[in-house]
Image (cartoon, rainbow, N blue to C red; front, side, top):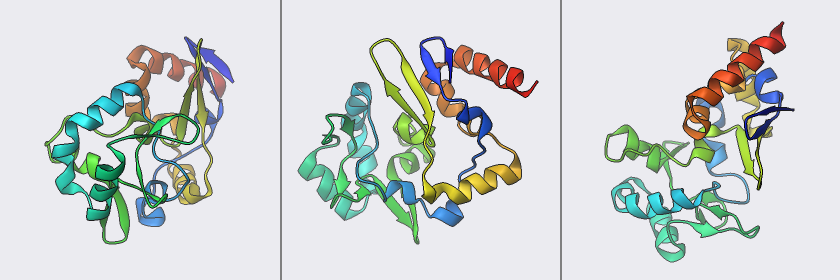
Length: 188
């Protein structure tokens, strides 16, 4: 672990390799697990505003879940998150054949909205936990991502480079530049 501004960062994000391998995992991170995607208060407001534009991309089960539960929920641990369909799939999931995709991101990719998706999804496999004085930035190892780890090793892409856009989105260009300096120093 090392400190970077007001963050405590796991060295694993510099040392571990990762490149999503959607053809292998079929988007399992959007349908497995026991909670929705973590959200910030600001993101709950965005979801409320964009839902009418995202709705046409969603499955009827997702629409039903959102209309019953809301565009976001408070999870059992008190955190804000996306709603789930029958405590499994994210309500914002759509499918391309057998592959789970994000309906929000599909609307973004088609230029219908200007918000890509929750930053927690964009950052994955990095998870950020906010505390009063700092944020913890950790690598989340999940066996459904074994193929992504293998592909990352094959392509020699460390986690922090794979999620560069998301890290810049979350922490800014200057923070990311400092992270790159730490990564270079660790290689020496």
